[in-house]
Image (cartoon, rainbow, N blue to C red; front, side, top):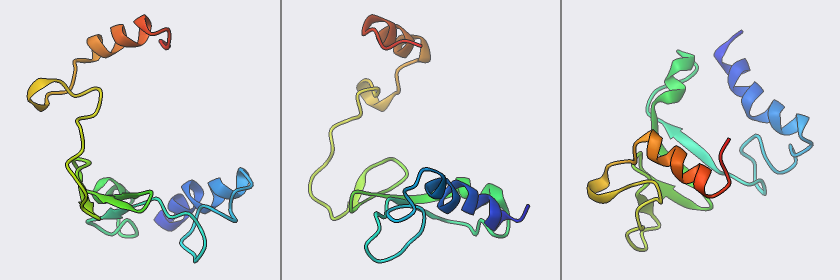
Length: 105
């Protein structure tokens, strides 16, 4: 399978299978456009899809640390899973939180 076929399977073909290809799955005027911007070409090597430079969601651009870089409005609050000093909670603490809230798996 060529890299473009793998990318298409996860984007346009996935949207088609859900019946949402009129709104999602490819870049076209009038479609929703949450996407990632890559540092490397995924057509050269499919593993380059992990080289994410920016994420664009709801019209806002975020860097790899999910800090908003455009349109710059204000510093975001830390995500719920980030503790003091910017350290992520250990997975055991997250699992305890999930089970306490009734949302455990």
